[in-house]
Image (cartoon, rainbow over all chains, first blue to last red; front, top):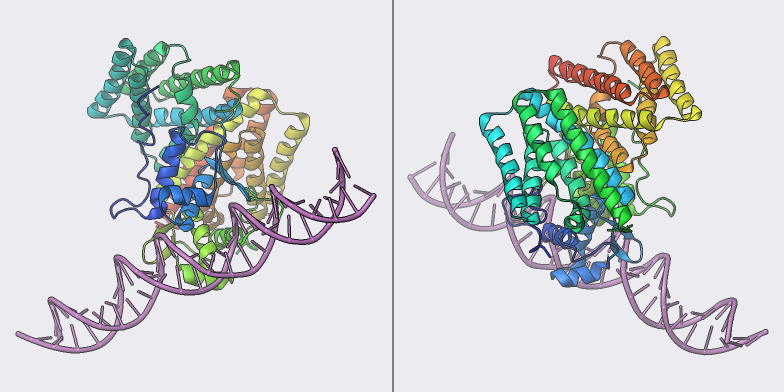
Length: 237
Length: 237
DNA sequence: TCATCTATTTATGTATACATTAATTCATAC
DNA sequence: GTATGAATTAATGTATACATAAATAGATGA
């Protein structure tokens, strides 16, 4: 069991930043973390009242949080049974990866076209090196963290906030499935090579090449995940 | 002035369908329509209390609606000034079109790869024909409607709900700018040719071709719009 | 006249109260 | 024993109440 994935750690400060967060904001983050950390597994139901007691506040801010989670596609709200954590099926994963593939490969293209600064390239390369090193140590959690960092860096460098936000939202939907399959999938050796090739394409400002490389990379990763889920009979995650 | 664009008409029934909608749902739809119809123009501010009176309900459901609109990226909520309709700058439009381009061209690729049924192809062709016919009558609103229909059809045929939802959300963000520039932009003659070529590519199941054609189409459209906004000095829409 | 400090107003964030409606339980009839 | 239906319970959706914090106005001093 990983030592609790550092969940929702990347783009979570989407909201009010400075002043102490409202209860509604705390409720939103708490519930989201419970879901991402699988403490509220897929299919869990939680009544407003229960959540309110658990979080030590009244129903009002809890309800607001639940509405936001619904809007994020993490839960559904069923009239009489509170919120229900949405299971992610392999079909859902396929959808998610199709969109992520389109967006991230567009990001790769954009970054390559604009060109990355030496520092930015160095950061990308460092992430790849960390992936490689972690994999050498058989540290899958370390690999996953570095992989996440690489992808997020790439998306960030594209400089499109809407793209970032969409990627982050879909990434959160896919999170549980990724964690679950991390130790069941084949060693991500090719993945590292793909990333290195992507960095090279960006470095030589080969926009079309960067797009293709990342498109194939993501497509493969998505297919692997979908197949794995199907093969394991994990219809729901 | 167009006879009131048929706003939010495409994928708006995202929520509860049957039973009469809650006040929160009504508030959400009403406010969204006010924004899309430019009755609450960019920069408008609206207090919870004001909105509540206007809609004949209490603050509670109104607040819920505003939270959802914030989550949708349509408004921001400023601690002391109610919700504020977010202006869309040309930089925002560039972001939006970058993402739409990536997603819709992926959709085109997917549809071409899977292949469209005769009926589906006929629907696409009918939309193109309507665009052509409307343009012949100098009916720009008719053209816009047919164009919208074509794009939505394409996205729908891709059969990826998450992709649909993202496209629809970004489309709503871009709506005001599109309406505003409809009569200021050059006649969309090339647009029709692009669409026809896309349908042809889909018909011959040329996935890569379909992607390229639509990618270029959307890129051109986006650049035209961004340039137009800049040229007109419309920093905000 | 201008600046600063205080008091008041006002919008929000949250809690609570209440009506509605769906589910469950219990009783009664067959 | 089963089924029907009434009554009770429970969860939501909405309204309202209230405390807090921010903006404004007003007053006081120079």
